[in-house]
Image (cartoon, rainbow, N blue to C red):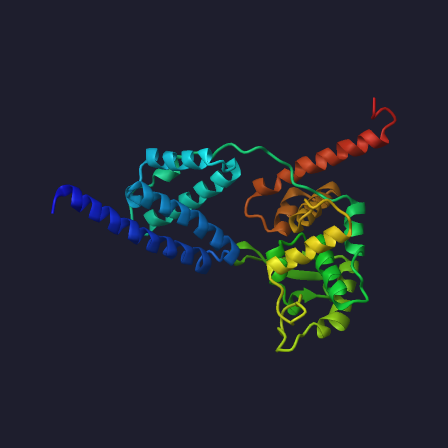
Length: 315
C-alpha cells in the first residue's frame, strides 16, 4: 500500500471514530453535566455539521489545525449564517475539544485559540405591567385549559423560571405553606424561589378544579404540575406553544416569548431595589456577568420614568 493510500485510510478511520467521540461527548453533557435534551440536541446538530465538513474536506478532526477551523467558520459566514449561529457552533466545537483533551483522545486543541465573532449587544425584550396583566388575564379561568395556562403564566411571571424548568415542576415542588417553589435548573442545580399570593391562589385553584379534568383516556402523570389534555406532563415545546397562543389572543407582539417573562421578572426585581447577587441566585445564573445585563434594562426604565415624570424631562 502506498503512503498516500495509508494516509487516506488513516484519515477515513479517524473521521469515523470522530463521530463516535461526538456521541460520547453528548452522553457526557446529558449524564454528567445534566444538560436538557433540547440543549444536547443542539450540540449534536452543531457538531454533526462540523463532522460532515471534515469528511467532505478530508480533514483529520483529531489533528485539525487553527487554519482549518478558520476555513470552516469562513464557509459558515459565506453561507450567510448569523454571527450568533457561528458563535454557538464554535462554542460547541470548543466544548468538544476540551473534553477530547481531558479524555486523552487528542492532545491538540486548536479551537481554544479561536475567538468568537463579535455580537451586537441586544437588550432582552421585557413586558410592561400592562402587557403582563393583559397576557395573564386573557385566559378563561372557568375552562380547565384556560386555568392551566393562567397558572403557567402566573408562575413564569412570579418565579422567572425557564420554560424547561416549568415543564419539570411536580405538584410537590409547590410549597403553599412557605409560599415558594423548588426549581431544577441547568446542571440539575436546585433553587428555591418565593412566589406571590396571586400566583399561589391560581395554582391552588388549578390543582383543585382543572388538573383532575386533564387526564385523557390513559393513566395521567401523577406528579407533573402542568398536564396536557391527555394527562401527560407538558413538555417545554408544548408550554411554548400554549404561551404563543395566549400572546396572540392578548394582541401582543409575537416577539414576546416565555423568556421575555424571565427578563421582565429580573428587571422588576432590580427596579424594585433587589441586589444583583440575590437576582443571580433567584434566576439560577452560574455567573454574575449573565445577570448584569438586567442592570442596563433597569437604568433604561428609570431614565424613561424620569423623562415622563420630570417637568423638564421632555426638553
